Length: 74
Image (cartoon, rainbow, N blue to C red; front, top):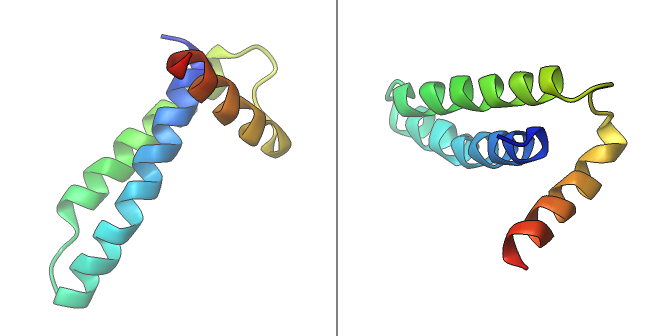
């Protein structure tokens, strides 16, 4: 799998887990599903950084996101 795609999927899963964490905390439940999503997200991000030579910088993330979305929508 392409490291850029892994990074984008990891960021999207991580972003979607934040409302799940907040909802579980507001209801007084343990955020189990959100914890699993965070672990998957972290794993994908670490794999993407490890597989790409030179890694990623914070300024590269928007360009990577746009290029992956453009690549798979086009």
